[in-house]
Length: 83
Image 1 (spheres, rainbow, N blue to C red):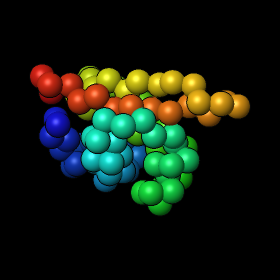
Image 2: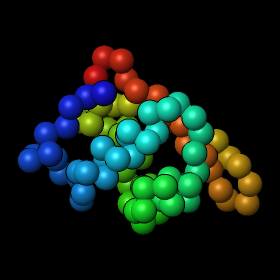
Image 3: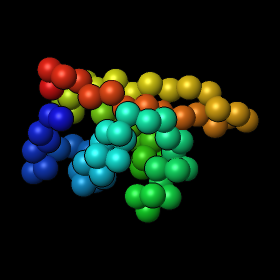
Image 4: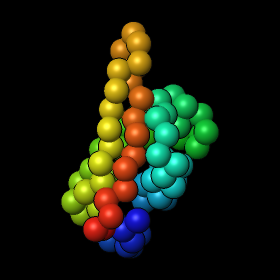
């Protein structure tokens, strides 16, 4: 996983970025409510961190999304091997 300099990271809470990437690194599909419950973070923050993981300055990782039901989506984190 790409190392993020926590002193210069522009995310709202850099520790959340590390928590989310670590939790999602199992390669399994997770919904935002599942992630938020496990990490005890707000759902909006989880959503923002998933978007951050896609950005080039945070590794340009792949975050796949699939529809589950009734507006609920599941996400799968795929680490960028060149990051």
